[in-house]
Length: 331
Image 1 (cartoon, one colour):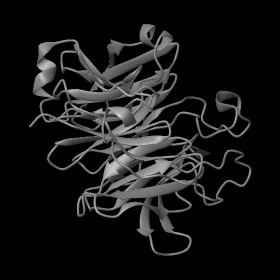
Image 2: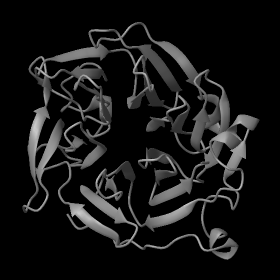
Image 3: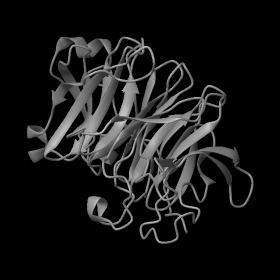
C-alpha cells in the first residue's frame, strides 16, 4: 500500500503557527502544579504531517528515534532528529492473515519489550506480534498471541509489559469494518487481556465498552485504562494483584462532558515517574495528577491519539490526526 507523502519541518514562529490547528500558546494551566511538569510558554513543534491517522509513538531505546504508525495506511514510520522521516515497516499490521478483513489496517500501539524487541498491536492481523526482521521484504513478524478461547481477537489496540514479562493489552473492535456489528467479530466483549510468560491468556476486564490506551503506575500497583467511548469517555484505574490479575476497578476521571465541545477521546497515555498521567483526551493531552486532579491540557486543535516519552522524560511526542508533534517538558 502506498504511503502518503509527508512534509518535515519545525514550528518556526508565529506566522507559521497561525496556519496550524493548535494555538500559539497551547498549554492551558488549570492548577499551579502544572508548571512542575510543563512550562506555560512551551511550544508544540510540528515534526511531520500528511498522515491519515497517526498512532502508537514509541522512542527507540538505542537511537532516540521515534517510531509511529499510520494505521489506515498499514505503514510504520521512523522520525530521526538528524535524518527526518522515513518509512520503516510496510506492511506494519496487516499481512493477509485475515483476507476477509475489509479494513486491512496496520499496527496501532507499539512498545519495546524487556529484550529491546519491537512489539506491535496489529489491527489487521488481529494479534500481538514481535518484529524479527525489519530489513526483509515484507518484514518478518512472529505472533505472540492471536486468540482467546479458540476465537480470534477483535483488533488489539494498545499494550504494555509488566516487570514480570507479562503483556497487558486492549482489544476494541476498531480494526473491524462495522465495529461491534461486524460479521468478523469473534470475541463477545471488547476486553483487556493479560498474556503471561507461559503463553496463557486471561481476560481481565470484560465490561468496558471501548478499552483503548493503558499504562501502569510507576510502582505497578495500578493499571490505568482509557475508554474511548464518546458516551463514556473515561479513565479507569485497577489494582494489580500479586498474581498479575486485577482487582475491582474504579472510575478515575470522567471526561464525557468535555467531548461535546472538543475533538478527541481518552486514548493513549503515559505515566511520569511522579505518577502524573499524560493522557490524550478531549482537546489534546490532559495532565492528570495521581489524585485524579486535572492539572491542565496541551491543546492540539485536532484529536490526539497517543503519546510517548523519551528516555529522560524531557520530550513528549504526540500523534494527533495527521501530525507528529512534540513539546518539551519541564526539567
